[in-house]
Image (cartoon, rainbow, N blue to C red; front, side, top):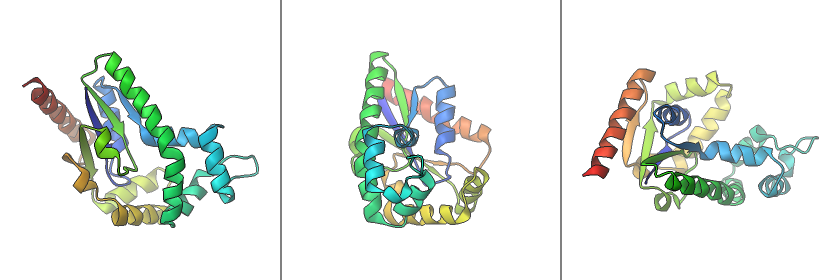
Amino acid sequence: MHKVAVIGPIGSGKSEIVRICAEMDFPTISADHIAKMLLQLPGIAHDDVAKAFPNTVDSMGKIDRRALAQDVFRNQEHLRLLESLIHPHVWQIVASFFMECEKKNEEFCFVEVSAPDDTIKTRFDEMWCVQANVQLRKARCVARGMTESDFENRNLFQSENIDFRDLASRIIINEGTHEQLQETIKAYCADLAEIRGS
């Protein structure tokens, strides 16, 4: 089975690509959505983060994810701490996803990864990096409710700390229509199938 990570800066369109892959009947999962779920549901990951970042916990005992994001994207040590508390649980769930795909003899599977760490190259066979110009990425994020300042903080942090292109096996420019993006993904998947079949 060929494991593909979909990576790229904020607002580039990772989720859109994973949705296209799902529509093509490939198994998909989002590491970002797993992390959000872990922060929302009571359990060891939620409790550890709440203990480490008490100022982000509201009066009901829930973690305010926006407050948490504002904290960690301004402090690299805090981000590393958060990742150390969340990432092991995320990758455990992703590993279970891989095992299920293997059992079903899937040819490919796709994982959206918003925050690639040092281990990512050991977990995937290939990484597709989605790219778009910063103005378009900002407009997409603002349209889904993010403030411009939040975008600027996250984008600055990513640009200073993650070299997405260096990690990439393939680059996908996502500045056109949804239909154009679909055609690109179909072509990449056909290419992968041909390579694996040769």
